[in-house]
Length: 381
Image (cartoon, rainbow, N blue to C red):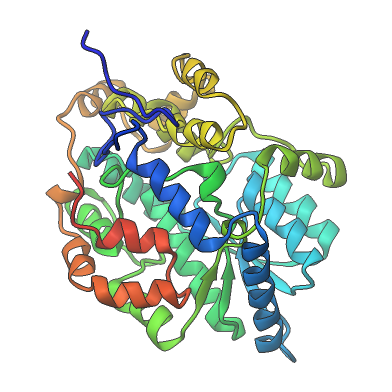
């Protein structure tokens, strides 16, 4: 077996999409994290000062309103910690949850204990499970990696709708590029056209109740309504391990076993679908992030990454039963030739064409910089 070049700072290797190495052997994704840290002042006085001005603006714009922001909640570590901190910052949020009906009981209980204790109102959008499952099944038959993409897009749309309904201009998100890492360009992709085209070709139900975000709806939220997405952890110092301890000790919050495992569909994607069908182990995102940040050594990250993926017993059987897929059909699809978003209609070329516009939108906090980088770049392979 030939030697594979691995980044000297993280554990991304030469098989990672769109990767490049500098003369020191450091990959472009580590350099991207460094650039983001410098731009947002992450964990330093610069970041704290910028974020304090954002908080002041949110409070000012929300004066005399019932809420001044909305925040997405999943029962996971990051969004739960945001609930804890958002009260310390003196904000008045409306919590929003998109229920794709695949939640674990732990996640559901975590949401309840946090909101009850903090006295935060919750709006839950529960999708028609048969319609949502039709989309998931369609992506499975399309043989693409983004099997659970419909959930992420729907949550974004529901957050925009909720913010617009209660008349606020700010969505708080618990994303941290420091702890979650940065996904490889060309690794996964999704948009409203991509989802609708795959569902039309492989799905069994028309999209009626699913909150699909079309390009025009997206433009409405960011250009007309001017709703901004704020990611506090891009500015502030953050330790997922410390956050988890606070949540467990102060709220009785419970850990669910791993990154993204609070939802059974996402757990299936991360522990079975992507590794077995695409040879893609997304543990490299968080392990690379830990290595970059010095939480663990690069050698320890590589050692953990090389260990077998653990998964919930019976999860595959649950997936097949839930989507009414026979054992033989499951094996057939899992052995099919893999495809990507490039094989189906999407808005990708449109986003690339509008790159100058989205640069201005990211500079105005109307879209995250990660969106600008991922969706408008043309150098994906």
